[in-house]
Image 1: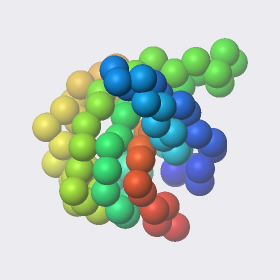
Image 2: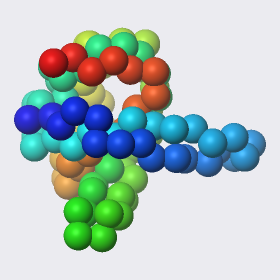
Image 3: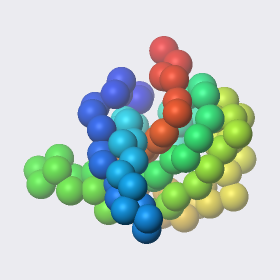
Length: 95
């Protein structure tokens, strides 16, 4: 299951510009495959609720979130590192 927009996470780029990523948690990678529409940048991370800490695992870009995660080339790494949240820019949540 994917949570609807838990909030935003501000990420500062090398140029100093701040990007506000929407933040969603998920139970399994399979949930991500059908849960989003839109396009843009995305981050996978491991969220720890007790400390509100996110360890970032992977940053990518997609022209379509609808199909990008069907056969993601880093899916094994993302799973192996315990990803349970996804942050993204320029997306629409598909309910």
